[in-house]
Length: 225
Image 1 (cartoon, rainbow, N blue to C red):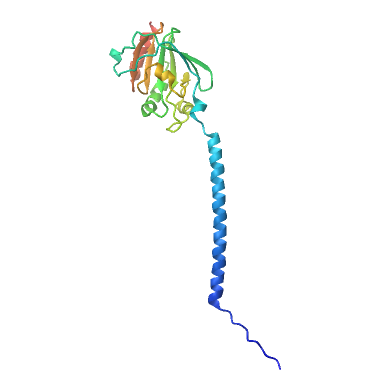
Image 2 (tube, rainbow, N blue to C red; image 1 turned 60 degrees about the horizontal axis):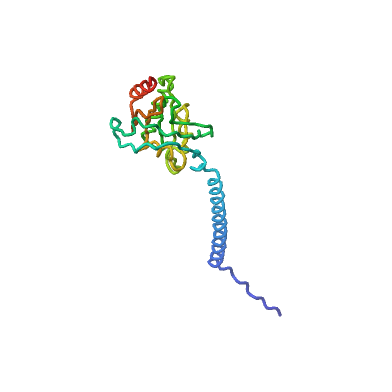
């Protein structure tokens, strides 16, 4: 005589719990893999960004200053002790590494100091670019812009792209990481202007925004020196 063992009836609640537990484990595994992949992606992106980011060291020029530095500009162009002093001679380079020189008795010069992150420079650069494009710089006068106070953590970096963005085509000398050119000319802020006559003597310094009509007057004065 045979005995039939009764079949165990499935427990729907237990089956549902087991299925839920499987899903939970699967989600944990998938989530863990996603976190690892995200971390790897961030690490790779960070390495790529750090290796391609332009730094101050990449931009800064090689600068050599000769002569006595000018005193710090105190804000009064009419009572500036630098007037009549021989300007220091600075040998440096452009963003492309071409040689540049300011100061000395190589002819009358207008030297403007610009920091790409400076809001006032951002306002003055379009006017200066238009002034040059209109041919208002006398033939006897050289104008050189000095890109100074280099700071990769501030806006409008790198500065060469900032100049290009305005369509500025005049000569540019790039300061070194220590702002040696600015220090040599007694810079007190940007924008900053220095006018040097044909004998290499300082005839004018000023800081802040200036009207282009004033630049006309100063340029004409040193052109006749």
